[in-house]
Length: 520
Image (tube, rainbow, N blue to C red):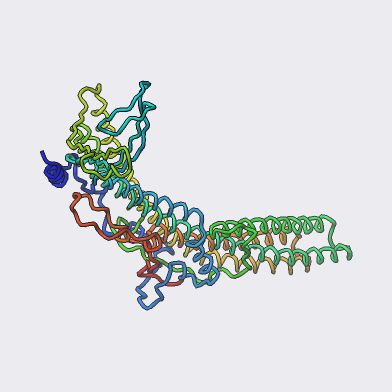
């Protein structure tokens, strides 16, 4: 058979071959999403019944999500994540590696052409010269021979093994792209949380400083009372104990503030010594976020998209395992030019060629292929369970953040009233002590209660800020599953290639994610 007809026949086989194994169909979640989240429709009691959900504010600026806090320092730090964050760079490199693997495996759909060239010197121990077909043996009994020529090897993907592998790698690359988006969103949320923690720590330092100043004045009052012979040294010891304990808390809080600043620096991709953040205020207003409907989580969470794409990759691996049952058909072809000199290589009469198909199949393997197929199906089932569990965890995280958003807003209002009452009790007790109507233990108790109330209020404020960032993370930020790169075409070697995958910078464009929010 002519080599031309052999190549044409192989092309027809490769283009029209079947693809064994199951075609992928996305399984539904374990429980279909409801029409609304429980925390947006469930019964509420007490003061929580007055909670008002956010209203549409379509006129607001639709910048990066963290800009809703109106903090320029946070805006600058969050923008550094895409530039310098090493964890994000690691995820981006993993995505590029996954893309390269797709291109590597897809090359198996096409022939591999290699070139060979060499020179050999051979002969025998007999003397005299004589002519040979490849050259002339000299009197020394040896001859030189040049060889050069291309060779072709082409595995005919008749059963779709290579195409299933490309399908699997393509889905894995999409999962890697979703992992990149998830890493970016997680870094942004962690940046916001650590930044808020640093600002709240600064507020705690301020409260401790004010308390130290107030307790110092109280100790001076007690000292004056002692000098006048009105009180005993026990009152002075109590005042000094309270003062020194508060000073110790002030020192410890400076450690916390420095630790959060170091975390912010690392998230920005800087060494702690390279980044310093000046003290600043806590965001005065905290957005109240409307989550939308639960079904949107399946489109907005990059970790759900990653789990779904890994499920598709595992499904394609079943086809790869099943294809091993069938014979491996390949086409090999070589052309070799032989001559005693370089000029002789250009003579067609010195060409030697060969072309023909090859077939290899496993006849007896002791059940290895069957075990591989069973293992591939088990991996797929595992990915299905992981996908469904990821969805359940996503719903849980949103519900948790929603109830915290609702309750903490109410708790902060109540705690502010508690702080005002505690400060009033503190002032009244100190005045009464100076008049001699209450013991100093009453002053200590009211001052301690007021300081504790201030700390609780700051803790609640931090919880609200952290909850808002966690709710953004739980809702998937501004990401959509349509931001995933297009899958690589696997329908056949004659299929028109799709446009190249987008770069990591264009995978997740910075765009608004929230539709409804208000400030409280």
